[in-house]
Image 1 (tube, rainbow, N blue to C red):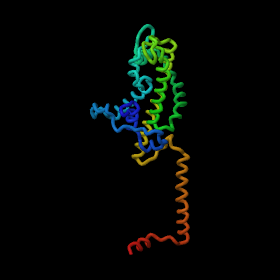
Image 2: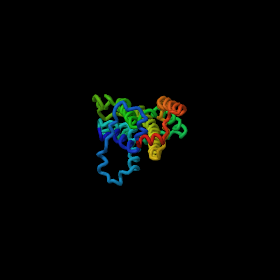
Image 3: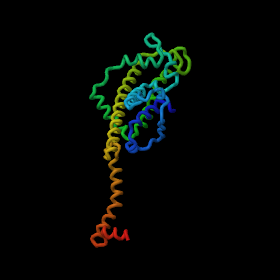
Image 4: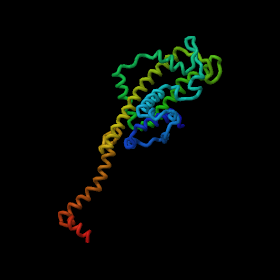
Length: 264
């Protein structure tokens, strides 16, 4: 769907991507299908569609990616689900966006966040960033179904099946959701850092490519590069040896003689 959050993420990222670098990744199992344009951008003026605007929207969308209720349109993204907590009624979306953030614990220390990032990021290295968005989206959809909508199934106050309402939220479930929001806030920050670092790497590759220089990337396999070099050597080395032997035996045609022969 061209208007989906995933398609928008892919569209904005590919604006910064370098094709040569993307080719270093294995082909996605499913085609990405990045749209050529986004209908939502039609209302913006040209000077509002510059790279820094695209980067800002990409950052916002990565944040949205880690808000579980932003992924499923079912029940109006949670607006149609009523919950009761501490004697007050909320819809599920406002509970997640307005109430839960007020109860989040303090952020983890930078050293711990760095350790988590160093532990998480290698798992992302071998996947094209646009495909990572799809992987992360599926993870969030599973979280919504299992840990957010799941506990509400068949537990409405009026005893109705499915997700009815209003639903009385226990302290236990509320604190589970607070922890879930905290975990995804930290994870979202780490994933954002990874994507921004990758965009910076793409920018460096574009500059190096314009200058005719190569640039190493973590995706580049030394074994693959070695194999290519060996294949080239197997073709070139025998030819060079043959030419050297012909030169030694005096069988090489001198350049002036060759030119005279061609003119004749």
